[in-house]
Image (cartoon, rainbow, N blue to C red):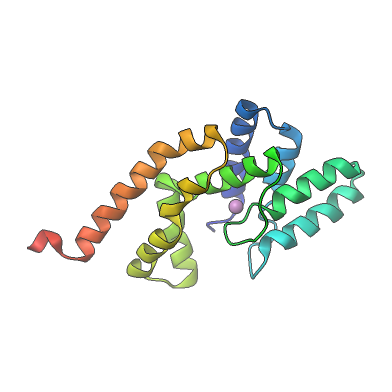
Length: 172
Ligand code: NI
């Protein structure tokens, strides 16, 4: 489970760290992080999770303003979604989710997804090029950009090494 409970808890931790440094609303960020991947399967998972959050939080009696802030953060967190984050809280969640997709954890998760979807190594390496290697340039906050530096470095190192082995460079 690359998007399981452990991913959610890591995103929560990273998001709270960034929120504290950037002065974002910790309650909004925490709630949004906990609910952001409620629906992972199928298309438009971010919108589905946002709708689910709206219903859940209004049932739980949260105020309109709080609910809208959480809903917007969730709907805008996705890499493939079309919605740009407008609030600091939404930017923090988007950054935290992306940080969990790079570095050693990012590599591990990419291969977990590959296993879940029956993808091979070469296809997964292509996914590095199409998505993972671009994520550091899609971060919004200074805190996240700093955190991304070493994670991205590792990602590049891993990518270069696995390419080298796939191309049998060491046999030449
Ligand atoms: Ni996520």
